[in-house]
Image (cartoon, rainbow over all chains, first blue to last red; front, top):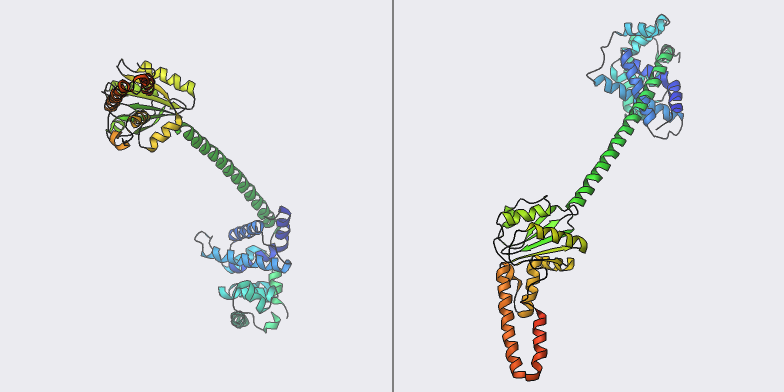
Length: 163
Length: 250
């Protein structure tokens, strides 16, 4: 079991990432709180010795995505709200119209594309790294990315290098 | 890459409130599970101690330290624990007396009272032997039993030897019968355990008396023929003393 200090450090370091991943999958503040708790409890109780920070980060991403998937299957999850309402609630008036527009486009993607898009465009992972994190074939990751780009192009417009 | 998606996601951040709430809730859960763990451990330790106490006292209670062997028309052996309670009844013939008696967990004096008062033992010839490592206790039990038994003739009580009772049990005999068998064996080396197993003590004693008197007759005849050597042989014959009454005869 990890120490309270390690827990505090992990929360400080990965909270934003966990929050974004939760936002990608869940559209409810209460669910997000539950996922936060589950992910960091697992972190506290786990004895895995991470090779480096990247290894630790990848582990947190995997655990968060799995927790979100489990939550989506759960009967007890809270009601989801519309993307618009959720984004307004999450960021208030701080979110610019452009960013709101982009986020809406990403969040409205089919479930299977969301992780790949987030990991590729935001976290900057390569397809081979994404395949390891998501435990998918590299070619599958490429296919998912290509299809997601096609949808995003329709919604956001422009070329993918601009995204 | 212009980073539109990156810029958009950058605006999403976990609030300090969420971070603190998560941290505090996890610590609360941790302490709670620690408490439950210690509570379970304490309960487990308590349960183990209780189990040991129960097992220990059961072993203590159910381990016989004395045996009272009662031989008449049937042969039963009462196994007595250190609290003077009957913890087992062995029967060494097919008279089914033990099954009809409800004496387990009773004090041995009460058990003896029941055995004799219910007319379970009708024969006049009864041999009672106490076997235990502590001779003082044996004598105490013997004294108590003698007080319990109603006036009957030919009831003999004696202290037995714990090694001999094991030998007796190996042969499927009660201690009293085993002693009688040993006497018979000296008088008639051909006699087998099966021949006497289902005989009552009265019948066995009659056999002993008969064989002893036969031997005396032979011995007397030899004495008459042998002249001066007769005295010495007489002494040898009577020293076996098979016909004589046992110690502590009532």
